[in-house]
Each structure stands twice: as structure tokens, then as C-alpha cells.
Image (tube, rainbow, N blue to C red; front, side, top):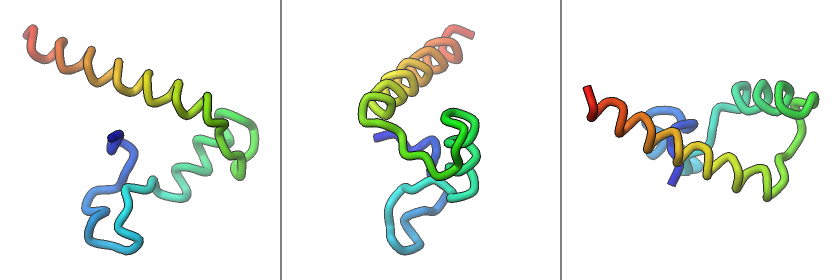
Length: 66
């Protein structure tokens, strides 16, 4: 599960889901799609998850190599 975008302590507040901050999400949608109310396509979301996983693996190995 990708939790890098979820606020700290998300499990303490309803709806008890790791959802990103609304202002952050609106900013990201505006920078990515030109519309703060845009909803990413399923394919874009899957691509993001793959990218995020690759970044975590890269950083994990980069930190371990020091």
C-alpha cells in the first residue's frame, strides 16, 4: 500500500483511511491535468503506483549502499 501521500496519524481520524490532504491533492491535480478537480484515470493511477514503488526501492538501495 502506498502511504507516502497520507497525513501522519490518519488512522486516528475518520474516515480512518490513508487519504491525502485535499489541498495537496487539488494542487497535484492542477499541476498534472490543469484542473484541481480532475480525477486521474485508472491507468494513470496504476502508473503512479509503479513509479512510487520503484522510487522506494531505489531509495532503499541507495541508503543501504552508503
